[in-house]
Picture (cartoon, rainbow, N blue to C red):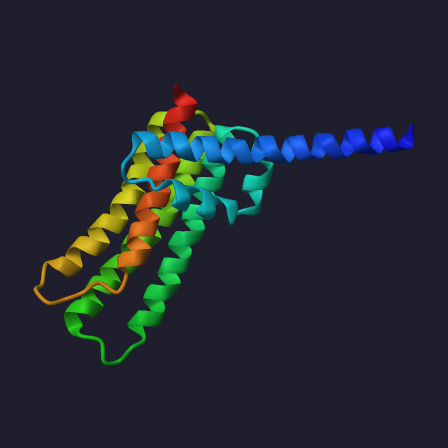
Length: 178
């Protein structure tokens, strides 16, 4: 009798883990299907790196995971920018761009916090608006490096990842709304 109870518990745990991973996989698949800016593998691997994704039981839980991951990413990019700015030999134009990017990412982190609060309050319109503003930070940061011929952004990969993280958050919010 004890072995059948243990077997049942093990089976239930495997089922729960399987369902939870299906929520992430299914949600990322749905998001990638509707938004060409979202890559399925990026969505799954990035969100899986957040321990809270393992306990997600629905898309609404994943919205929070995606926003928290984007906030963390914004902070990491801010730290990278600070490190890049410490280079005394940095070209003045690049320094100016990086200073602008630093401010953009600082604002993005704040916007994402507001977006998370709005989502939790079911104010999806505000959540969409402020997360979209955060998302624009990546594009604005990247585009300014292109304004001067021959200048290459040192943040291209980071900007692309941040943009995609915000696209994931927005796609998940849209799924919850529907």
